[in-house]
Length: 207
Image 1 (cartoon, rainbow, N blue to C red):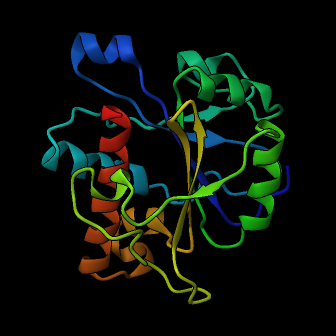
Image 2: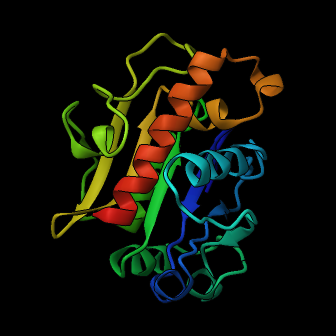
Image 3: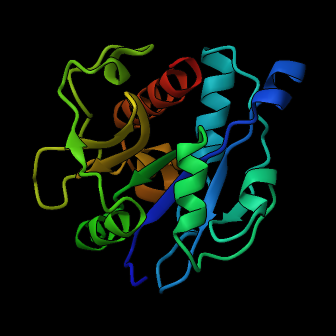
């Protein structure tokens, strides 16, 4: 799997743990192939802080790296991204994956997703999809970084009506979640990114 300059964000939800203690865990997906899964190290911690403060969630502050090719994906800690079947099983079993284009991954991720779900195609989410208004009102994805100046798009993979994967393109949401000093984004842009991230989490928690 050859991927350049992007981060994959894997949201892992533990129903038993959540119902027992009211806590949730998020993780960053670790993979092979030359990509930078370790990019944006402050992104998820900042999003977690924002959601815990503004949505009343109790998401763990610890954000480990998790390999997609191991059974540990279902248990939590981590392993190594060598196969696709494990990810398919995880997603069909109730998991959720957010893939955020950090500029330059589009041609690669589409091919890889086709290996995971050869029978499914990415569908562009309309601007009135519930995920854009789950908690904060948006008319589609906010534009955080310009890059090629294209309109931001949100694509999804669905199974039996459930959104199991969200691919955000030409927006750089996770860059907007980072500490301000990292990308020098305005507070307005960072707040837009955090609110949209909160929408994603809220939607997944409640769908």
